[in-house]
Image 1 (cartoon, rainbow over the protein chains, first blue to last red):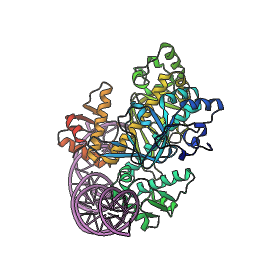
Image 2 (cartoon, rainbow over the protein chains, first blue to last red):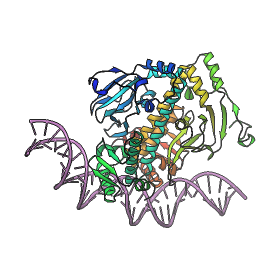
Image 3 (cartoon, chains in turn purple, green, orange, cyan):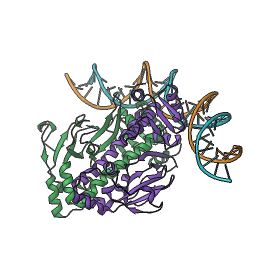
Image 4 (cartoon, helix red, strand yellow):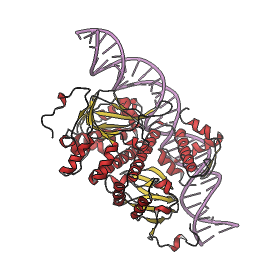
Length: 246
Length: 246
DNA sequence: TGCGTGGTTTGATATATGTCAAAATAGGCT
DNA sequence: AGCCTATTTTGACATATATCAAACCACGCA
């Protein structure tokens, strides 16, 4: 973990070379067990760090595909657009997660990614990632797992959208955020939503009013406490139980 | 079915070796441009062909992950199950397509695959596929594209489930089948559904009655002709136009 | 500090889709 | 061929969620 290399010391528009071997996200982003020699090779990725302000695009649909991006800090939403302007938020991507996998199939991005707050990403040129993963089996395996995990995640959302009711969807959403919070060593009970009710609604296939009403209802039932975008989970087990029955 | 070789004459567990170089699906399943030498190596996959009768499981959720499967003939549905028994059909997989990608992430299958008719699959041991794709870059690239394509497909269904109305979903479904039919050199206007209204409903996040009503409505409007599971598309452009407005 | 604007909550009402039920149809098996 | 069962269609009605509208709130900016 890089001592002496603080984020603050880097100018906002700079593209800085960073070394995976020093990255404090290594476990999350590319948690492969590498020998020193392999780790040295991984540096050949010579990926760069970029910063984005809230509402900035990381990429737009149609952009040519060059790289995957590992999120070092902050968060993004991804969305796809329908011909008639309707949009569907397909994911909220957080620290330690990888974004851009959809673009591999057609060599251009099919969705767009927008920063939900000030964020930093690590650019991983995909061609080099492929070359390297031919040389380092554990890296190859990890890349495959990341892609497969995205498929599983998407299918989970299909289940949610296809067969859950509004309050179940919202409970699932909150529990998912809680779990991701916990996996980063943060409190599973204190959530700070980075997205609006409208965006949550789009993600969950609901209107923003329905999202708002469901949150209010949860609060009335003593499950959570809502203070605008800060949400405190008061009864995690009951929230869990809510999915499935009703 | 091969002449003189009925399903019954082949023990259920028989595994026949097949060669990719001879396979008439080569273009669809692994359409990589290989030299003779590489093609020779591909044979090392020494995949086997298996047969399944309708309603047979190809794999169940929880099964350990060993192989991907390329569908040589027939079709399968994939579904995930919720704790409380609810199920969501996540895909209808046809000839030339690959199934099982979800299992890579956790080394066990997260969904289950059930044959919708008599079918043949080609088993592709994943460990060998990984080894080979380290040696053959174009195979590696192709594997990545297949996984990415699955991600894009799933996100398309998220859009459908999250922001389209019942008849739009059904139109999208029929158009998708039509297109896949066409890509196999079959008529884009004559569809033979292998799945029930219940299964279509599960896939589209609708009840079977809604699916039936929408089909009847399309028929009344002269868009299609429904004869149980045989569907003739009479006005493809109008069906296309139906998605997006209304 | 106060204003303004986007975001959120809440209410009244509309509607698409679900639910329940019965009739019609199709396909498998003897 | 004809019965049996599962699937599909259709109808009447219920309801979850959407829609429209207004009030409320929070936060950034002057």
